[in-house]
Image (cartoon, rainbow, N blue to C red; front, side):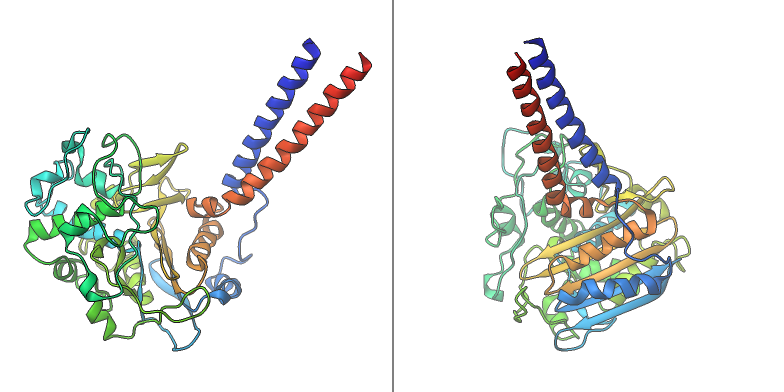
Length: 418
C-alpha cells in the first residue's frame, strides 16, 4: 500500500512541477526568439511586415531615443499615412488619464477623495459596500470595486447615443457579457477588475469639475499643448478628416460607431500624433513638462494593481513588463468591434516606443507591440502572455497526461508483481 501511495504522490508532484515549469517557461520566454535578430529599427519593421498582412489598414511608427526612427503603412483600399485618423478603442483611457491627472496637478481633483465629492449630475447607486472608497485613484487603476465589466459596443445612429447619466445607470451598448450598470459590487481597493464604466465616470467628473464638455477640455488642455492636431473625441470632426476605413475580419467595410463613453472607448487619433504622445514622455522630450510633470508621469507608472503576483496597472497606464532599469514598459491596448485593435508601448527610461493602429486584423497591433517589448527587453509582456495562454495550457495538459499515464503504468506493474 505504501508503494502505491508513493507512486500517487510522485505522480501528483511531477504534474505540479511540470505545470510550474511550463508556466515559468512561458512567462520568461523560454525557447522564444526576437522577431528580428538585429537591434536596428529597419530590421523590426521588415520582420513586422509579414505579420501585418491580415490587417485591412495598419499604421506603425517606431520611436528611438525620443525621435521617430521608422514607420510602415499598409491599406486594403484607400491609402493611410501618418495623419490618417483611427478610432482607437480602449487606448482612449490612457489619454483620458492624462486629462484627469492634469486636474490633479492643478489641485482641482484629489486622487483619494470620494468621487461623490465631485458629482452633482449622477451618483453611484446604494449597495452593500461603502461608496466613499470609490476614489479617482481607484477608478484610474480599475480597483474601485465596480462590476460593470464594460466593454462598449457603440451606437450606429446619433439618435441612439445615451447621455452620460443614462449610460452610467445602464449602458445600452454594453458589450456581450457585460453587466453595463456602473455600481460597486466588491470592496473598493480589494482587487483589480477592469471597468470601462469607471472611465465613463471619470469623463463625467472632468465635466463636473471644469464646466466644459469632455471633448473641449481634452482638446484645450491635453491635445493642443502636445501638438496633437489630428486627435479628437469629436466623431463629426474626425469624420471630416482623413479617417481610416473600418473593416471587419472578413474584409468588408463597416461604418464606425458613436459612443457616449468617449473617455473609455472613442478617441480618434493618428499614428503621427500618438508618436508625439510617446515622445512627450521621453527623457529627451523638447518640452518635458508639457501637460504633466515628470513627477506626475512617474506616479502614473507606480503599481496599483497586480494579478498572479505580477504588477499590471498604474494610474491609467498598463505595466507590460520590467524594462531592466527598475521601471516598466508602459502603454495601453485597445480592441473593439468590428475589428479595431490598437497598441502603444513606451520605455520611459530610454524614450523608445512603438505605435500600432489597425482595423480589419486579428489582434495584429497587440501582437506586434508585444513582439517589440520582447525584441527590446527580452521580457514577455502581459498581453503576449495572455495571448499565448492557450498554448501554455495545452503544454500543461499534455505533459500532465504523460505523467499521469506513467504513474498508472507504474501502479499497474506494481500490482502485477504482487
